[in-house]
Length: 228
Image 1 (cartoon, rainbow, N blue to C red):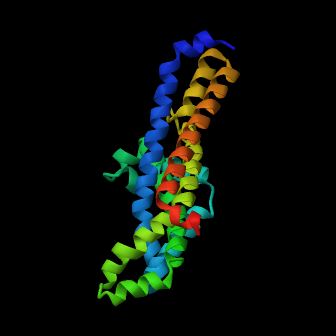
Image 2: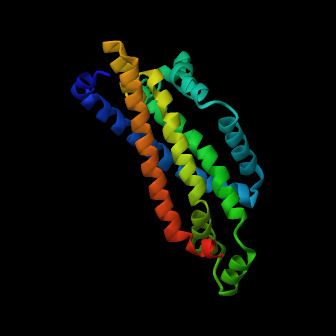
Image 3: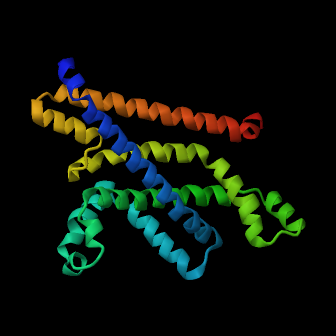
């Protein structure tokens, strides 16, 4: 093992960690903003919008994330109207294509997580809120959504871990994340073991950090369920 080269090129891996965390955090945040209204539409079964959301969820859950990334990065560039539009300034950059693909993918999975959590809201909570004279928007804002978010904490923790691991494919379109740093290290020094072992350790440490954070959240917000 060439630890001297790893120490020399450590800033490359630190940059990869930052890119991975930045990309994952933004994708999860944007995905949540997509998922919450979509989950409410699915739960309320709004006639036309429900079918649109169903199609979106099926499209992004039914195809591999790598294919979605390729479609945004390579597929859209084939259309002249895309290259001639304002959007080309964004879609020509691999980082933005990765963020868009990851956000839409995360939004599709999170939609089903939140939809299930909303559907499992006890009827007694909703009836009690209406009995207090709350309007429907307040019932959802003060009772249904907070309760659903608490119940979805374990599943959302898994989604964040899966998204962080899935973000490794960003390296195939030249984004220098953790795996991209390992590939660059291997390409420069022809030492695959050192670079990829380091990438595996870094992904493992980040996964442990996320797991510990969500265990803390579960202990904070799901104590009553554990007692039950």
